[in-house]
Image (cartoon, rainbow, N blue to C red):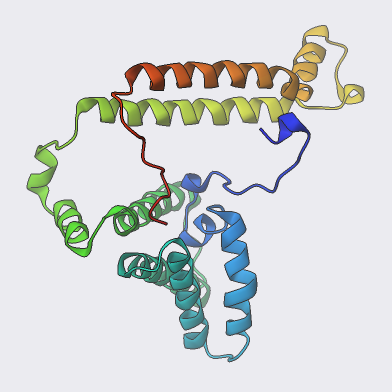
Length: 240
């Protein structure tokens, strides 16, 4: 939307769920806040002492403040502490790799690292989502209970919506990558009219994306309006 109005804003989310480590994730998620915490909390604390345990402690403190920024509650304190411990654990793994000069095979290590990272990050979102400690305990208990996976407590339409969002997200990323790949300067194009047309459409994307976005927004508004059952809608960040 900012591009449509001629403004260039710093990126705040850079495909965080493609991250293969917790450290990479927190350089891609909520980047404006992550980098602020890094520059004004972690780095000033980390340079006070040279011991490794102190740097780990500073990292956990920084992530706790990251959590409390959202809301001053026990759940967000635990969420920040949990993610701080994940970052410390990842650094310990990196140190072991350097100590033993071990470089794992990328074809095996990358998907395994991604699955592990996303599972641990998603597990932490329970503390972000739960409304109380007891609810968080129930959700965590359900995660480690095999029997809970045989029951479904939400409607199938929610699962379909998640699948649709995932497919839509993948399609958007593919379109973005395709447009970026074809956004080449006119002088480097081959003498190919088709290539010139594609490059022109890619370079001038903000001219045709704006009406397309407006049309999509109109469809979404109509769907929400027609399916809304009445009453006031709760503001998403009302408790933050």
